[in-house]
Image (cartoon, rainbow, N blue to C red; front, top):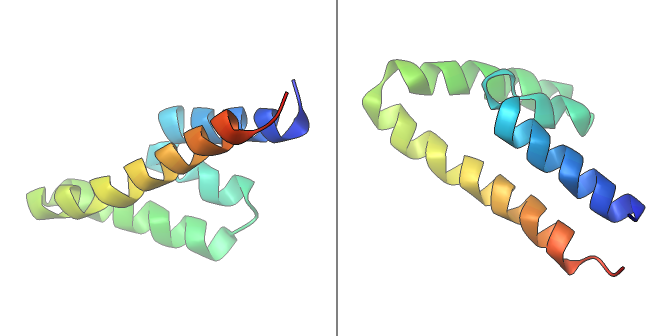
Length: 74
């Protein structure tokens, strides 16, 4: 497995299991974005409308990581 595939798998795992803690942002080295995402994720879960707005960036990041895994050459 190549490095690009490993990074994509780690990102997918972080999105799948670490999304409440915004672990994918911290993994990328984006501490400010991670803290912001952490606060906004929990704020979104407090409101029903927030969940609707939260779900779009989540799936966009997930599908981006899946495309990175699929697009890598063996």
